[in-house]
Amino acid sequence: MEFKSDIQIAQESVMTNISKIAADAGIDEKYIEQYGKYKAKIDYSLLKDKADAPDGKLVLVTAISPTPAGEGKTTTTVGLADALHKLGKNVFAALREPSLGPVFGVKGGAAGGGYAQVVPMEDINLHFTGDMHAIGIANNLIAACLDNHIQQGNQLGIDVKKITWKRVVDMNDRQLRNIVDGLGGRMQGVPREDGFEITVASEIMAILCLSKDIADLKAKVAQIIVGYTYDDKPVTVADLKIQGAVAAVLKDALKPNLVQTLEHTPAFIHGGPFANIAHGCNSVMATKMALKLGDIVITEAGFAADLGAEKFVDIKCRKAGLRPDAAVVVATVRALKYHGGVAKADLNNENLEALEKGIPNLLQHVENVTQNYGLPCVVAINRFPTDTEAELQLVREKCKELGVNVALSEVWGKGSEGGIELAEEVLRLVEGENNFHFVYEDDLSIQQKVETIAEKIYRADGVEFTAAAKKQLATIEGLGFGALPVCMAKTQFSFSDNASLLGAPRGFKISIKDVKVCAGAGFVVVKTGDIMTLPGLPKVPSAEKIDIDENGVITGLF
Image (tube, rainbow, N blue to C red; front, top):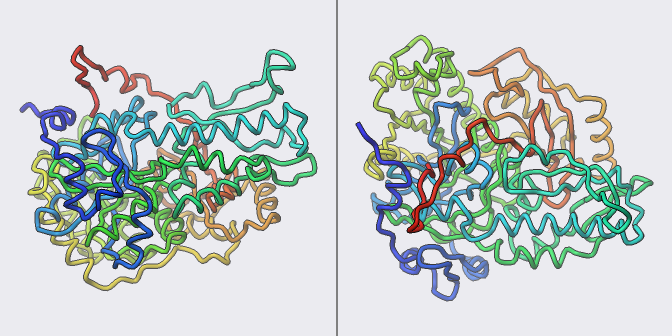
């Protein structure tokens, strides 16, 4: 049977003018800045004007540890929002922006899939409203002014061997991870070792996502530490006197982007950090705006519940004063069989034994959500035609033992109609009891926070810090940043820091190799294992499949 591609479905859809989507959502025309017919930015003054309006219910969509078999977290998020809309609810979706690196690298797109997508799909997956470019320019403006300060006499006494600020590019490009720049003679800069991160892993991205307004953004930018002097004093953006210029570059990027789903449900797409190497949540501003406009807001955090959901709880909710009402954990039978040791080529065959071996991955994520985050939860099984009734029943039984219901989701093939069962369970959960809490308290040391996450969320036997990481830790705490939350940089494929340990591994320790303070964003990044902040392209990148014809019609995004 032939299935239409995601991009075919998106291109065949009839979109509603974004001004009507905004009007139906209760957004006054004075707040709308249109980018063509189907995209708009919403002025941040709306939040001030609606400060006294009640907040809607907030639902987090998270998932099991990802596999090559796919899970469908964004698809489920969009489909759930559409299903609630179909049930007559005033609902908003709040999603992250795709990054060009994975679009041209592995993912080929990140706007949902099948009949549960946000549109205009091509725009969203490519340049969209230019937010990523603004973030990249803001980041590299700091880098340029930093190096220029050193070139022009270095009044601050910055040690070029202690510069922590990297340049960024919105592309998977391993060639740029470690470079030497400033070559070519005295007038071409000061030679030094340098490197790039991917734009979505930058502190600027985190600041954009965590800022409550433009003044807050400027204040956060001012606090960014870019390096250290010869006598180990931190040098900030405020010392370079450019926080105003950086904030000016980000003025429009800070405004949430309004689009629609295939079924015309309003959706904010704003901010796009990865959850394995960054904090993985869309912007506070978009989420808060959605909560003021909708009775229910469906949002997602990157990757699985040990990464995106933990950071949503411990970083985003802590900093923004958000209190979610329920969570959805997305899984597929195919992915669980993969966690149970089945090769990708054999996932279409019924295998209850492998499924039983893989289910602990799901159960550990569910336990984290219900016990460690204190949220009522439903498991959404993104159904595939090859799933057997016996396999689905096994998942139901195992989840029932934890007091959690399973809802089948068929939104990929059926749109909102395939998400009604899930929507009804979510409506039940948001009206029930809620014991939401953080994983750790502020007053723990950074080391204690890391150990708490590793032991409670990952089920590790402990944490091992390298000598270099211990030294960095002491420096950070000596500077007074010990009370900050931590942002764990860890492989998304496993609860451990070893990508090959699938399922729910036990008997491992987490290895910490690098600790860095992001004083502007207000958290400490802790790198585990061999995690990279600038991914590389695969052997056959998605870019090879993407094309455009003489009429400007794009193909190959999926």
